[in-house]
Amino acid sequence: MSGRLLPAAAAGYLGLQSAKAFAALRSARKAPPARDVSPAEIARVVVVQPILSGDPGLEDALRDNLLALEGARFCWLVDTDDPEAQRVVARLADQLAAAPEGSTRLEVLHCAPAPPGTNPKLVKLQQALDHLAAEAPDDGLEDGLADRPEDRPAEVFCVLDDDTRLPRPALGALLDGLERARLVTGLPGYLPGRTVWAQLVEQFVDNNAALTYLPMAPVTINGMTWAMRSTDLQAMGGFTPLLHHLTDDLALAGAVLADGGTICQTATPQWITTTVASPGAYVRLMHRWMLFANLLLRRQPPRTVAAIGLLHGVHPMLLWGVLLGSVRRRRPGPALVLLLGRALLLRTLQRRIHGRVLHRPGTSLASELLQPVHLLHAAAQPTIRWRTRTYRVRADDDFTDARA
Image: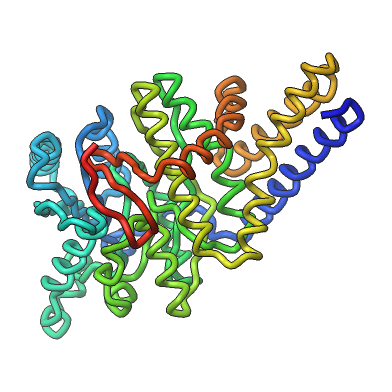
């Protein structure tokens, strides 16, 4: 990059990111605010969590949700071939049963392995939806039993990943979002990781979440936290029509939009902790996320692809150009201005949206510089490793089990 272009590239980077931050803050002001929920409201929520072992923080994350969402109904979906997850869930169930009498209800469903070519998470969620529909106390409505919150059918189907913590005020925002749209989704925020690889993942999400989900009309959802009314889910056939889609969040969002529904994006964070112990685990995780991003782009019209490319694909290249150009030209000024402006923008946005500063200067910068590398890797390698499974991916609805 020529010396004359360096200041322009730095200004372009800061201008683009500032415009996205302004749009994100404007959307956040219009989003349903965080609020507490009443016992009657939370009694009509079922928190559905597909559970897999493998993360040392699994038990703490599940316990934290039981405590934070007291009064909700929990439905935990555990694989029959996952003995460690079964042990964790059994311990927590025993602790809940031994606690002083409370209103939190917990059910554990044991799920057989998903058939080949199907999405294991969606198979589990369909089992939960079928279970809840089968036991809905219809005759209780006639007998007057449904006057008690604990006897009412679960009206809100809230899906939460097993590494995600949903604060009670964030649930209030989700419930209010269902007054505006058929599907409501949350905003992810990562808590500090212990390894540099976890911190790179953390900074990737914390750098991009608000700037990705808030400025544009939703084309997908944050699959870590979302909610729908159970009746709306059942009316669109549940998850059965989506079982052969690899990306559950994109498939669900597409089904809702195709059916004429709308999506509400909240601006209240849910907190995630994930253990990333090695560089290999980090590369596999980022590879999977970037491949999912490619699948998302394939399903969008050209105008949307162009908008996403401009908003989310240009800034890492500008960052590379300014840093390399500043080193080559021995002109540190543009790079210093860009880095200081970038840090100030991210810190301000995170304080306003997440309520705390999540920015780590070194790993934040490294994470953004690595984004084009991960994107190229995803484009070149269609085989992903996802927990205990390996898939060869040709399209969102065309993937096969592969044995690595």
